[in-house]
Image (cartoon, rainbow, N blue to C red; front, side):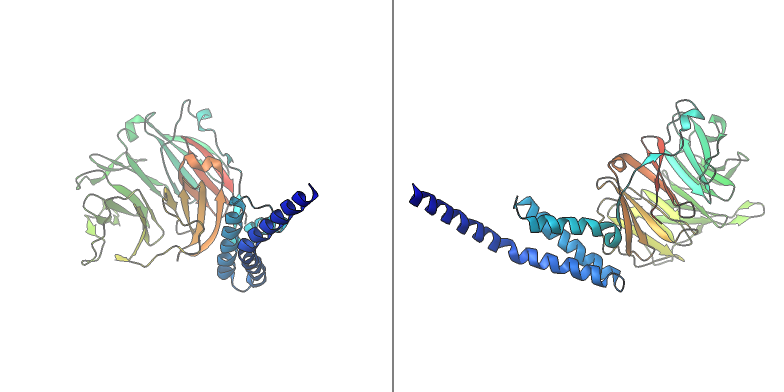
Length: 344
């Protein structure tokens, strides 16, 4: 019996040694990556993020093999402690912002736009448009069926709100048609510096209508003559001087009618299915909502990663508006408004 036990424990010990031999190098490399990331973060944050991301991947791979080793557990804890500092990852609370049903019973928002501190939310079925001031949280009904019936897209600039309908673009305050419908199907509209931009995805054109004393000019082909992008899968448009267009497969950026190089970098995991984007001339960064990864990713306007906010509730978010001044990300989730307080 003693001999049998000795043989058993000998075999078990050899097995443990063999198992550890298989992963000890990976563990050692991951440890070194974490140490280096901590050291170089103040000098080279991009490289530090890359190192910590690689180390986290290695630790998660080791944990998935159900390896029982206190060193792996300690390294995982160390990685998690660095996620906020180095990776800029925040597991965040998404709380209610404004209950619009108190303003209008049964209100369900499905489209959202903003200008400065004002957010405008459209309830297409209830045929109402409401505004909310981000700083004061003051809300009011802006328009009803007479002015917004048939609206399928909207935009705002300063105190002017414009809506797109099947027969043209209308200004809400006056109720006046400002631009005739000179396109085939439904379009996206966005206003900037008083001008209105129409993104006609069916023809992959961008039209600009300049603000005049008497209304708006006739259409002007905004894209340079030799620029022929594919805008047929457009789902969101924002303008900060440049025009940012979310299409299937990525984000396009155009400046003065020409495409600009734009590539996301150092994001883990990579952005693959963005649902919406947001920026403006007042903001320093670009914000990307990604439903399937339940997050909002923040990048610079040249695509460099800064931080990301994660929450289970973001799985159902459809659009976002951001105020860096008020440190808030406002989200449209199942027809209601929620907010994330940014860590700044």
